[in-house]
Image (tube, rainbow, N blue to C red; front, side):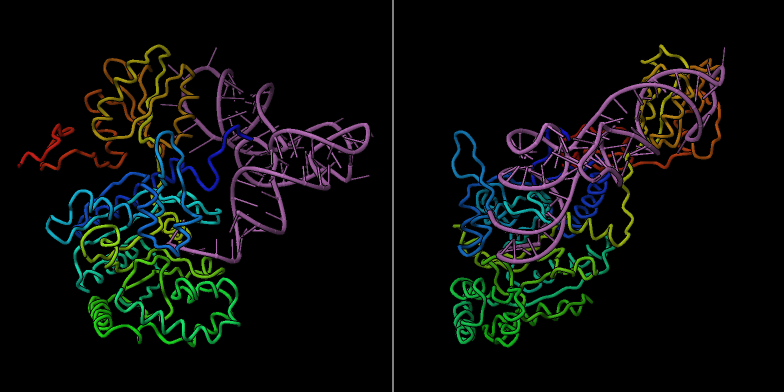
Length: 450
RNA sequence: GAGGCGCUGGUGUAAUGGCAGCACAAGAGGUUGUGGACCUCUUUGUCGGGGUUCGAAACCCCGGCGUCUCCCCA
């Protein structure tokens, strides 16, 4: 047993999986940017109040799942359990409500919940999300949902179904609750303990009860959609129509509600349908909705909002489960070998132009026999070996050997990059600024067109 | 936070309460410097702490971690 282990419910992403996550992130970030949602990054901790205010009193996230941080000299910090509250805090703190609306942002960050870990439910997990502040129109709801639908399709997730519902706005809420309390009260004695407690607190969540008996009772309850205001219904009709016109397939789930109190009107979830995930209830890969009262609750003006959040770990697992190919390769393209045991610096010198050209280049530092170095290069998964310090590689020449095709060629030093390029696919080289025809790393931190 | 089940080198496994083995992987070397083979050698383990016992990987208790269920939820 190792002396130290990762904390309970937290895991390492080893290079292969991390590489896959990077790919997924790149796809998502690019998509978010194309929709006009640039990335935002907030601290990993916030004042506990930020979460307490946003989540609502009846949410467990606000209570026992809060991941408190005991830090010398600070009071009342907690690791963030989700992205919406911190982003909303940032929106208000930086006066983004006084910038052109709507404000659209994307995030991808680790989140924390102090719960007992289960499969795909960690104490530290990765979550991505979109938030849109300042747009009350149904088209914003539609955009958020359509984004998610397209994202999941793009990355290759097929076994998923979209469920939508409306739970009415804050004005409708009292009426909705009253009607549901009235209905469920007649069955008070038949509900199990947990469920009966919800009757006092957030009645809506009775629909989430797992007990078969409770579910049966819930099935007969009045539909929330029939209890909300005409405006709420009209909004929902617009959302539905928008989804239909965009060809987004969905089903209306009369009993779907969400865990947080701040949701208003539209709520939605993307549920995994692969048998692997439906054994013990539904697992959603993404979900969200409208939260028109949240900004106000957090101490700001009356600004509408709508957003989505998804679990990266769940999505990633589901994709693997479905057999979606994700490139997790971390191997070097090129391995530098040498028959000369005392030419360490020369090996690095040989690697430099290849690295400049964008190849992944690893060096065998050892003084072992070429035999062993070659074996090692193969085991490390390199595609090409560049060999110096041999008979053939004198006079400014090296051997470029394709380890897959098992063919090699003696090449002039000046032509190594080109020769390697014949065997290894080009890799994109990141730059600080996009500039047509730019060579090398751009030294600009600002856009030169400014 | 509660409950069920589990935990043997890096991985996969074996060992009636009686010497902790095996395979793969890993490292070094050789096959006299062009590769995954082969050969030799080497490293690494009973999750931790108590207890029962002449003797514990095994039985008991506490803790850790995983997994599933509940709670809750991404």
